[in-house]
Length: 185
Image (cartoon, rainbow, N blue to C red; front, side, top):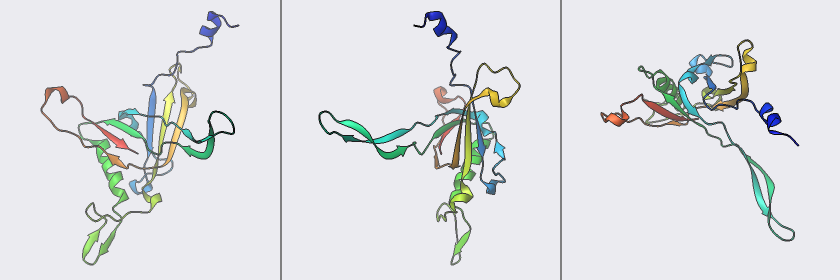
């Protein structure tokens, strides 16, 4: 049986929710690509690591029901991130442009241009998808090898901004702080 000293010895500082970095690999139409990471994650105030659930169906031969896996896995599919705005709204402008890229493929219909917000023309999927990498960082890392400072890596392939929330402009004192906006990927 373990004593309290052994338990303390085997427990480190614990993971911290505020030690993470986020990198965005924008679509090639942005001049991005597989290795062209953009460190917009400096201003990601919050994001959620994905969860996962295995689909189940109630089953019983005799007695009480048991939950048995039914062959489906749900990994959430979407993820929200909240960004802190800079004075020039750089991140918001990039997210807006990325979102607009989805429905602004070039084309005309008669003499009217299509591929606008009013008359969308969707691009091919691989033209607007990018990648997002979230790294949970260790708090006990003392420099040196960057791979050792990363405790957990999540990479989201085929990511793109589905929506971004509106932002209120107001003179109310209680909301006069730094502006933020939330994006669903």
